[in-house]
Image (cartoon, rainbow over all chains, first blue to last red; front, side, top):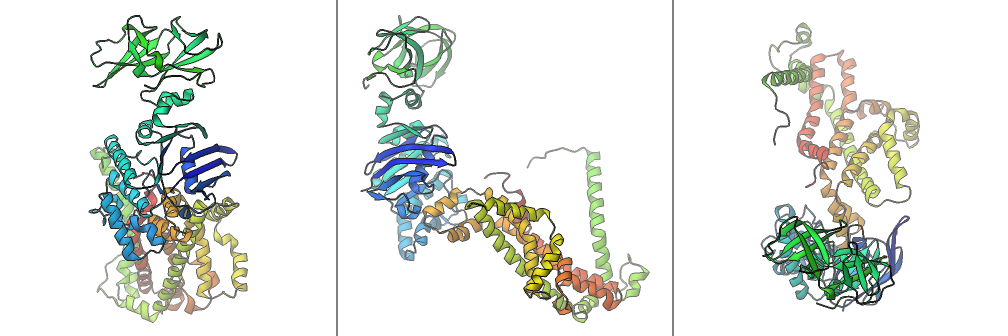
Length: 356
Length: 280
């Protein structure tokens, strides 16, 4: 068992409040990812769970036990840091075994556990090296090994892959997913990379300015974003937003084009229509007239960056053999089942899109 | 490393000339001291101070060491400098660790006081210092001089250590806290090895400063048997009516520990001065 329950958590640095009334339930053996732009409070939330930051008010419970005032080491959590935070003067073996040495565990026992963890992480041949003699990926594995050795109930990861190059990041992502299956524990993971969030998480928590914007499964967030911020943050390339005005069950675009709405909206209210690039295609008789300003051919797909008459930029996905040219004027058709409607405050209007 | 500037031949010559001239200016007095320290008698020093000795003799060194009680002065200097180095590095590193990593209400004021100490020379506080040392009954003791010299070096040492510690990522200490290390363990096992260059820098500066210190021992010591080598050399003047050849030998003996310290610590010292500019 390892459930985390966070209730009414607030955190301030002096007068600046960085976490606002965080309420969160994390289930047993869950993989929860905190995601959001820099400065949204995701790392602070993680460090508060770890006990490295003191909360201002609220409480954190692990398996029903209030750990809010416990020292980091007494919380039964382990953390993997962005910069790996390996002790440079110690060998891999000493780094991994450090926590158990601090806990005055028997030396033979430490050695046995270190070798066991090293085997799991394929570090067994590197045990006597110093961190400076390791590659970025190996260092990160040592950092994970150090966390594993404490056999915690909860693993906390603070942007663990952001210092790695793109190729290694994909590799490590898969290794973390495999590790999660191998260990029975709860994982809490912080990243600003929404691809990492989508691929690793059972549950994503989207944060902005210290508030939780939405909690949900990755595909829920993709298909039913609660507001414009989440809609824009989840999904790559990001969602397009078209300004429009409501008239009955119709949205009128700036250039006069119209799209039908699934729900009644007060006449004359300002709307933002959200359409993901993959739900916009060139189509004869499409409602959205655009000029192509840039084309990116990525192989399996291509993306056209286009401008509406009023200058609004949007991105549309193209088939590989699109045959379109820069400066060409085309019409785009939208898959209306995937149309997201947001009001002037950015809140989602109505039930929204069907699951694709 | 690529050259930042490419100098023309003439510019090269000018630069080389300046460097060589400067080296001569610096080395000349030392060279004179070395030559004269090997001369067998005072007369030869007076007749031709820049001439080579007629016969090279190590007798002056032996005589300075044995005859002028130099061994005792040397030992006092070693005790004073050694203790000062240990006290300053230990106190400055713990102080810096607390000021940087565990700030508390008033810690900025304490740091400010240390910075004030960098600016204000300790000689200005000599009168109250003398009274304090006297009241403690430490006048004319090595302990008194050691404590005063340590105090006088603390501000600069704290300044160097805090500056260095700020450039060390705090994630390492967070990791140690997660691993269950208590503050002293974090300081001893994690922080201390990381700030080794700063410690070397502080140890070297403190050693050289306290080894060469003349003024403070002069004020706080009275009996010749407590004199460090700096005061001991001054004794030469009265003892031998300026026996220059012995005096030079004494000065060179006095130089040796400083040179050894520099050679031992120079790599770490340079690292200490440059670290923080470039991140790994």
